Image 1: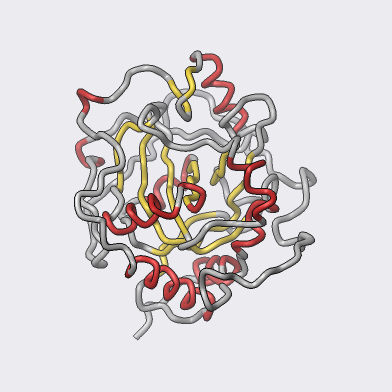
Image 2: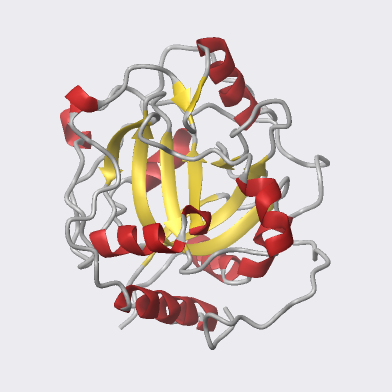
Length: 297
């Protein structure tokens, strides 16, 4: 029997199933709805929460990939602090083998951080109103962001999709594609992505392998929320936020993420109305059949 889901979650799943991998790079500077499998959740050196997901393939159109990927913020060893949810070894190796271009790294802000509690590698999530931020002034600073608020009534947020939910055909096809992809991974034993021992963690402020001053780091963070829609407000990790063991078996974990605010001024929530085309508008694209997978998601 399928789990009873809220109208909000059902709406996120329905809209997320409309996402097209081949149109991904056309959606930048817009807002996206999508379904994805969780790779991991990371806390960075600047105390930003990053939800990392994939969809079992690279994105398109290929002639727009370099334009986005060459300027995209990526979590690297220099920026990594700790896992909140570590990657399952098979998923981690699959992404490593396929390439980081298939990994979506989403900076999560304010009250949406609470939605990450209990999420583990291997879960499928519905993501509503993810913003493709473009920063033209600093390198390696394009970001995917889940801003604070509900997106002015757009049901912005993160919902975990129960394993027994089978109500959407495109979700079922996505699960099948990822299962097929993971089934071909045979070299996952001993997979390691980042050094996690505190003594080996770098102390400098670095982004994507480049050296930056504190002022430039702050500028990056401001640009990630240039519309004034919130800050990645977190507190220092507590014992309840210690990294958990990777688990794709469907068992619950005890991970808890605090969203208590610091005592600093919050910016007003300024919505995106009028700032660009909606992610629901059609973008011109010549569709081509996939050579990697026999079904189209």
